[in-house]
Image (cartoon, rainbow, N blue to C red; front, side, top):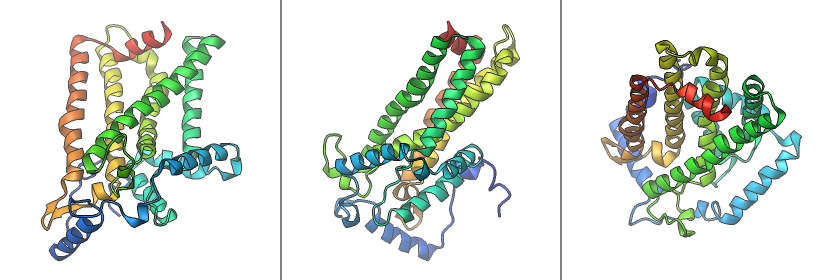
Length: 315
């Protein structure tokens, strides 16, 4: 096994280059263009997907998740804990293993959306416990603690997740689904359709490092991070914030490139598909540079993000 296989990142992780035999590459290119990628001359509606993405199916999936909330024996917390562990230490392993398993378990209906709320329950519980700890330390009032729980869970996690998932749902479908229309149902039958629930799942996965860095680690380090006129506190605190957000988008990229027609498709015999490269370039030349500029400006201007956060939450 590769010595780096248990590490969270490497250059190969961010920008993987897979070598292919020329003959197999041509065969794969032809087969994937005819099966995964939708072209102008192909039928965008695959028979195996005709009943996979209807609104009725989505409602049934939501009802199934809600029913499982009241059936503890049906919840798979062991798998959810395994997912959390790998999202922290090796997120690519999670996407390689988990979504392959999902493909096998759903038969001919390719759906990557979770139907088990165990992961969501655990993450909501972690955030609630963190909110209680923050409240007891900095705002020891029962009512203030309740408000903090509501804000951290409902606003920071769920509301922000709904907004981000909706943006990615629109962008990804506009990019990879040539029949996509926001108000149309036909695009939902397309083999390249990406469900909104999958986008929200990716947000949940990516939010793990936000919780670990900004709700847990920052809580422990906050007395040090908020020392006034300390350049070390300023540097470490701001790096923690911008690093966590950068990690969020890196794990998000891993999630979307785990989709077969995004991460494993080709446009020619010797040319890798621009689908995965598009996400990589968006990360490398768009999001990460903006975060780096924001980090640099806050450090140069002496803006301690941790101090600003404390004043926002507890003023």
